[in-house]
Image (tube, rainbow, N blue to C red; front, side, top):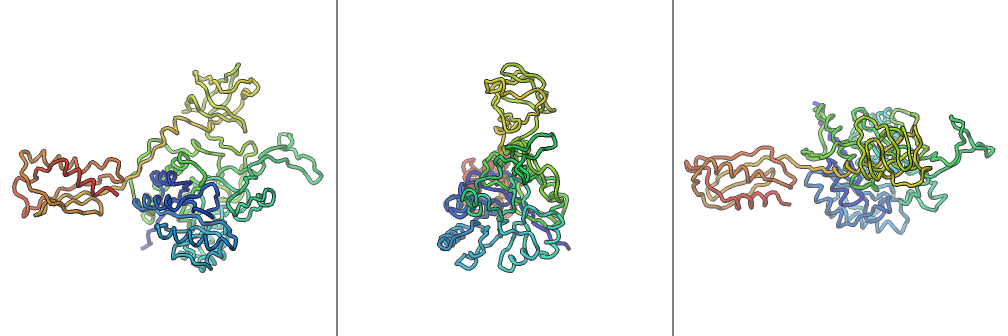
Length: 499
């Protein structure tokens, strides 16, 4: 019989708040930066916050991975190891590292994952890392389905394979880009990339002449190195078949709204795949997900999309017009007048005051909407988009207001009479309560009260799947169920559902 394979949706956490939001939206694991050496200088977190995230995550069977993946100087190894021990003590599930010399130092007995910065693109490299003690490798983003399958065929189940599925892309191999270091003395491998691939450039031939594009325009001051964002949402089943078991969303600098939206989007897609395949299961505790919104990647930070070499080289990997979020296509300009434009909106699009609109690397916010006419918060006529311009919405105010996700674990509740009082079981917790067996004037109402009060799980992480009242004839009189004060029922329920 084929073993069941856990499938992990791994989400980024800039901080404690974003980490909790990722868990609420359905992540099976989150990764967060260590206090130092986390390869994102702007996304460091205290041990106390990481401990709080671990405590919250483990309620749902969610793992917390911590990035300690900066290349280190000799004098930093002792501090990095001390941080690793602190993280181990607070229950972190794994460390993601790049610097292999850390293995020669005093690390705690914690699970290790090899960062994509280790250039994990061949079976030989992956097997080498497995021999060094790594339990998982984060594959290079540039690998095709065939290359991933080749690695899987070589390593079998010796080591887990993790792959990026969504988010920002580097124009160079991860861990092999030195542009920022050379030009700005800011090392990407030290967590302080200057984002030079998001800047404007000219394209010149060997004689210094500007090269002409397909529209006979010189390629001058365009964003030639700015890639669109990765989006492999259409290929999840194919990636699982190739051997990927962890799907990683990029974005440790992204905000709560982005993470909630993208995690919810992939949670729903993976749930559909898992439901259709009995050999797959969710890596964290199965839960009930409730969303007040319809997940849509174009509704939060979105530079366009590419599956990025998953099916070999494809056109339109880059966006020369802007490195910023373009969002969703909403329509085109069909008329203009002083301080207003008329838009032929795409089907289903409704604009709101405060929405952000962009075209190329320009944009504006909407002051007000009057039918098909919108009034931007710009004054000069020459800054308005011309007739025929395609417009995108990169800020949907109503969508952001709706971004709420709730995660609850389905539990069974058992309530039983025992000689000394009552026994209550909620999920895997059981407690006995001493109380008088007081006859009820109305046994039907008493039963309804017990069920209603014990079912009120409210804002806890639990949702009632089944509730059963156990009538033990040897213990109970014919007047069971007994009268039990509502205050007592509420107290008992709270004690078993509080953390």
